[in-house]
Image (cartoon, rainbow, N blue to C red; front, side, top):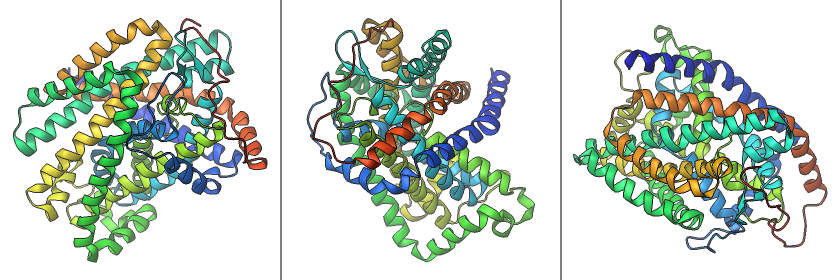
Amino acid sequence: MEELSQIISSVSGFVWNNLLLYLLVGTGIIFSIRTRFVQVRRFGTGLRNAFGSFSLNGKKADRHGMSAFQALATSVAAQVGTGNIVGCATALYAGGPGAIFWMWVSAFFGMSTIYGEAVLAQMYKTRDKDGNVTGGPIYYIKARFPNGFGTFLAGFFAVAIIFALGFAGNMVQANSISDSFYTAFGIPRWVVGLCIAVVAAFIFLGGVKRLASVTEKLVPVMAVVYVVGCLIILCIQHAHIIEAFRSIFVGAFNPSAVLGGAVGIGIREAMRFGVARGLFSNEAGMGSTPHAHALAKVKRPQDQGMIAMQGVFFDTFIVLTLTAMVILTSGQLQAGVDGALEGSALAQASFSVTFGSFGNAFIAICMLFFAFSTILGWYFFGEVNVKALFGSKAVKVYAAVVVVCIVIGSLLKIDLVWNLSDLFNGLMVFPNLIALLFLSSVVAKATREYDENPDLPDTENTESVETESPAD
């Protein structure tokens, strides 16, 4: 099993570091150019639109969809996960402080990619045979390729996302929670896993209504808890903030000036680990978040595209950056040094410098928020594809399997499952990127139309969708 895990890890590393790294960033550059850098021009509009529908107890989601903020919250619930803590620490160890600069670069271009995904999800959303609004990459893939090739691409994407996020992904998220609670409080892993599974099952059984209601409350709360905790640390460590920022910018182009030449980290490593971990965290271009954005009740598809950009901004420019600053100001980072702290151990040690013994507890609480919200988002993304492949009757079976995966994942050391999740995450990106690139002209045209006429009557973009059977 250990040898198999290493083989899968090598294949996954090749897919992410040698193929997807360039394809995802390249797609972001293309969409930035074709939309005339919509992430800059329309950032303020998206911010106003997103929080214009903000509420901790908004209108309930229904068969017509959910509010724009609920869709954003569901998207952010999946985006902001353990990668914002562990992934950031791993990137800093492997790529040095300069990796954070390249995370910012990838997120900047990723904002235009996720804008395109959300616009297309809105344009090609449909209704299932029960009359519920649904959407996601499989629908715009089949719309662009209405033949056997499109059916294959859509089916491949659906299967990959169900396994990558619904099953394997949620196992590792549950494992992260149980590990952090065992380390911080000594609570047995099986107890933590069982509690997570019970709460998750209750939310799953409530459908999209209950999930939207939970995420619109959970996401703001987890954001406030983590951001406030990080800001407290940075206020105490304020004397090191300027040096931390300097190390990020210098390390991006001259890592040896920050780390010394002996550690073997160069510009290539800083760029590779920064871009890869950044894209893996914010999920821009991966095809996951469009499932949530398709359900938003907005006036025009472009409105939700601008709102979707806020998810990438929050994930990378706020949460990941705060994590990086806490680590860099703590003095615990020894990038590239064999045997030095990395991953979750580095994050815990960095928070403990200021918080003392409460550092482990704080990380455990944040991991609970981050990982559990990701479980909810990833379950939902898988559910949409289960319905599309097998119909609504298969949802209960899917939910039961996910609950079992949560319990098993919390108990085991699952390096193999984590590597499989990474691999399937990478594989599901290819069909989505193919469709995005072939539909980039559609997004560009929609953006031009919005720029020419941004004001429309206050009608929601929900009634124009057509009914489609899951078998279609």
